[in-house]
Length: 243
Image (cartoon, rainbow, N blue to C red; front, side, top):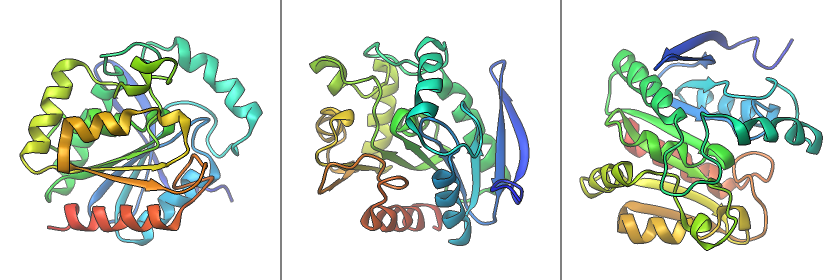
């Protein structure tokens, strides 16, 4: 039996783009966006914990091979394709990755179905900043940025950039000022995150709830799992989505 056999496979289309999805659970909606190289066993395992905690979890499949484990080879196979894909902005500053349009529509659709205060959005590493971009849409009530790593932190400007266009950044700041908080997770020694937590602290003020974990790990919720990070996410989702 595969790890995804108990999940309902579907697909979502928006803006002319279609991606597969996997869904499981009941309760408030949470969209978990996988890291590189894809829907690994640890990402699926973490999503299962959210299901057990009482959430309807949707896993978009954006790239990679579902259930393939994390490995250097798997990353090397996927990364070159992502760097040339038109859906993802990997190096440019002051731009929102185009995949955000699709993800926002997915969030709206889920919220329209389930109701409540909104849905949660959790991105990891390569997709970490996508949850911030999704926050432009009011359907997203609980954005979580786990070690956001785009654009790749080559040089000071990219290291500080939050992968948003000026217009989207203004919209995010407006929502933050209106009470929508953002949870950010990283290991303090993780160079992949660059200095964007400092940027988010400056731009969002007290609405950015930053969790700086000790150590030099990277994947806060999966491969280098921190129980503190796991607990903070559950607390955040419970506070924002069960109103």
